[in-house]
Image (cartoon, rainbow, N blue to C red; front, top):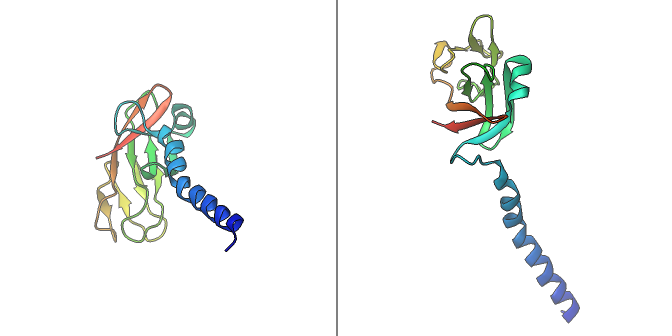
Length: 136
């Protein structure tokens, strides 16, 4: 191996090994100043339709319902039966799975099967202009 090739390989290796550190440093800005709370969107987004779906949030998929002026609720919208994404049905005040008909209460508990496990829930609040959640 020539000296130039060796130096190129060492340089490439250094860049590749530094990449995860750089990514972690850049993504650390998603943590809220108040501990384990993670930002999943803005209060303006939530106020538009009364719900906010963050598929790629720092804590995983999150569906927040409510408005910034009222109590908000946050759940993982992945149905515990078959993994479909549940939808919030505001008029019925429940989450419904479009795949097999499972229904969940506002607190994530199963109201109608075939799902047997509740949706994962999060503590949620408005902090400044941000909607933040914390796994419970």
